[in-house]
Image (cartoon, rainbow, N blue to C red; front, side, top):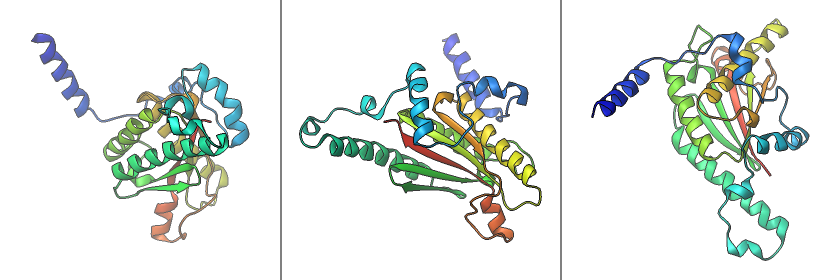
Length: 224
């Protein structure tokens, strides 16, 4: 009984303590195994052995075998397997993230999650907010379940006069998000982390558009 009470007390205390990013000097430790480059076919192919050696798996390994897929065109059957796996992931994320500043889109086989900065970070400080803690925890829980995927975590800013400052700001957002995920059980060997500055705006550079352009995008791709 005493152990149960201690467990409940510990859980309650943990829930009440706001999340705080660890010291920047420790980030490399949390992100050991992550790649700091764009996620593309070449980089995913190179990273696949590293992920598998780290205990990761492919979609083929993660999918319950359908006897019907033993027949017919092998390439088409394999594509159907990837499509089904990613469709399930998209559905789970879409249902869980019907919240302001967040959206889930399908891009071919990949799933794209757009997180406006205000949905995950403090308004005037480079730190995960209490709302962001809840939102990112939800995403981490789902991505742990659908672990046969690579994740590109890309930070973006609005237009800034200083391109170097924009790149640093966007990189901080991406790395801070990646550290959060690593601390919540996602393998860094699944991650590609980049800061793209003011590149690829998705809204006008007016007052409201600038808030939208400050964002973190998660592009999730199946491990083939």
